[in-house]
Image 1 (cartoon, rainbow, N blue to C red):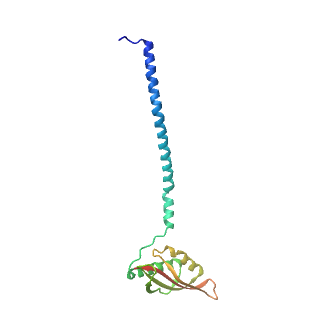
Image 2: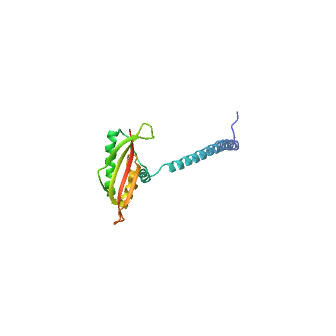
Image 3: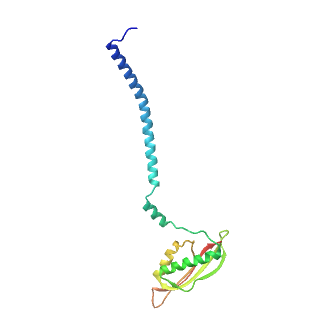
Amino acid sequence: MRRLNDKEKRTLKFGVVCALATVAFAFGTKWIGHWKQARGSLAGIRDKLDTINVSDAKRAGLMSIVPVFEMPEKEEIQKFLFRDKFNEQLKKAGIKSEPLQILPAVKSPVAGYKLLRVKCSAKCKFGQALDLLANLKENPYLVGIEEIKIECDQKKRQDVKLDLTVSTFVK
């Protein structure tokens, strides 16, 4: 076999380079297309995660809005817990009440639970009564207002007599 001259060597090198460039272009365009698609789906997933993931400050704000309720306990235990928490809410609103009366539990429409009722009588300002009603949702035991009676004092219009019966579920 004879040796290749310089012109043939250059032609052969040029052919090999062109063949490699053609193969690289064919596979490169497929790979770049796949890479762009993967980057696009990654960006979409990151956008979804950003909408789901909230900052710690925002999470704390949301958690403060969401009420946290305790599961109903046995009547003997929960009547004291509920009474103490309700009494604490009365004090927080600035209402001085007569001693709270725990009424006998009655069957509730919710299967397996009874309705524990607590009766409260107090004299307070109208604004204090409204504060109490607004803050009942902060009670960890699901509170329902069974009966409410507000009588206005004839001499002092802001002073009211509040008769309130609240309830919660017990086992």
